[in-house]
Amino acid sequence: MGFLLSKSMDSNLKKQQEFMLHNSRLQMERQILMQNQMRERQMAMQIAWSREFLKYFGTFFTVASVGLTMGAIKRKRPSMLFPIFPLGFIFAYQMDSAYGTLIYRMRGEAESIMDSEHDRLDLPLGTPTFESIEKARRAKSSLSSFLEK
Image (cartoon, rainbow, N blue to C red; front, side, top):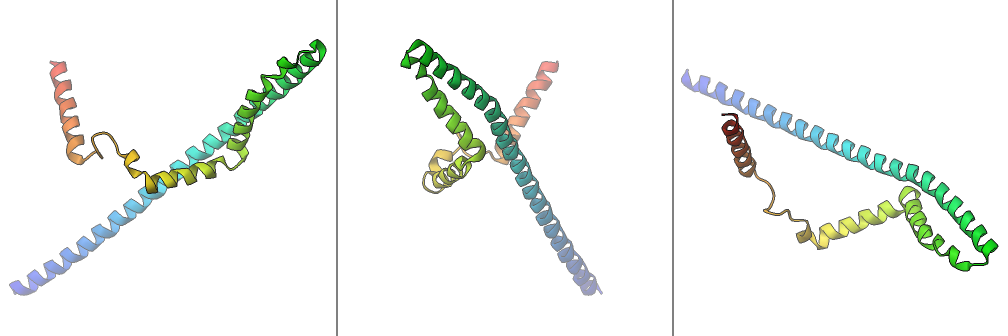
């Protein structure tokens, strides 16, 4: 009789462990999907910001270029055209950031760094562990309880 009860309990325990494993996998998949969606939204906002900034800077660049060109022609001073060159570089960078391939080049460089220069990515004091986080939490909670006195 005890053997049958033990066998039944082992079977139930195994089913429960499988169920818990399945649930933890589902939870992890959901968390990964959620983090990826948040990353995509942040990147979309960054690209949208670049495009919006480009509209304003493009207008400024156009007005400045026309004004400087007209001033250089009127006053016969070609040195007035000099500010157009650095502004042109900034405009080209913003255009590349908003509509060009800058993001793809940056991603390629990031992948290269992760592959060949991984030691540059190490955190000071290493990756946080449960113990280090708990130690900091305890120190903070004991400090706050000490300050409350």
